[in-house]
Length: 301
Length: 107
Image 1 (cartoon, rainbow over the protein chains, first blue to last red):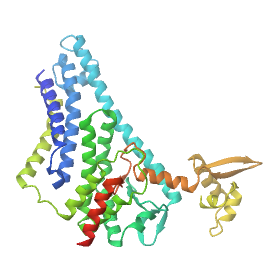
Image 2 (cartoon, each protein chain N blue to C red; image 1 turned 60 degrees about the horizontal axis):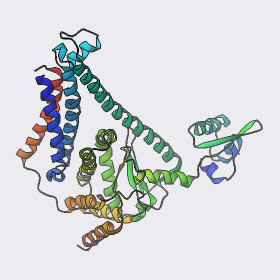
Image 3 (cartoon, chains in turn yellow, purple; image 1 turned 30 degrees about the vertical axis):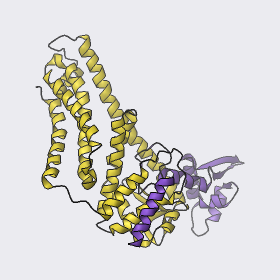
């Protein structure tokens, strides 16, 4: 019972923490740290929520969540008899766990499929440009620059983007995309996109996904500025933002200008780094979050 | 694929092979490639006597438009399949960015 209560408390703490964290102001000063904290919050919340239900469910075995589940899977008879409440918790817990795993796998498979088709089409219709070696060029007047992540990742720019940007700006954009490729930001985004699909009504999850999307862009900006002029990156960003190439069909771009300005501001006037103590504090918090849920799954309190 | 897009009619594998003049490809190679593209849905084929005639399922521009829609994240599903550089904004928001850009360029 104590284990279930502890896991429930942890799940609540993660939910409340995520909600508070969507308003945190320091994230743009340390995007990587913020991404790690988001990931820890997500993993910990998932494990704690399902764990709380399962811990209560396998209580008749009296031996912790994981051992209880193994015993249940082997068909052992528990020390105490089952009652409806425990059975209900078992069904709910296993369903929640299965849903979380299923949405994650589905999102992964869908992303892989979309990328495979995208890559195949690129092979058929994109061309090389001697001016930008190693980059695929799409013959389209709108401005676009993106990468198709994967084991053989590809950076793609449109002819519109080549025309729009100066040479220095193009280098900055390519450095930014290379950073996405290197740090596998697609894998960071995937679980948040999956969770969004699983809980489409949750404002916290939507905010978290939007935050992480912005944070990986900032992290890529940070890596890119080591190889190029931050000012060029900033002007490239603004040029892209104002290109207004295609009309948006959904009208959901309210945050667009705000996000672009946030990225430009920190490129032009970098805020001071977070104090070391604060940074270590957040690292410690992440580690605690990441370890406590699995420990509570194994240990019976 | 370029050859099939350039010609406006459906071609047989033999005709495609002839048009790829710069490379000496075996007819079976051409057939295999065409067959694979068909199975992946990029080509459509119709029976013509003993041979198949192939033509593109969509125009080149349609495919480019499809890629660009995905690239600019205008498909609306916010999937994590691609990572993009920046998003274009519209109307008054673009005005804010334009002003910032002018300021930066003047400095």
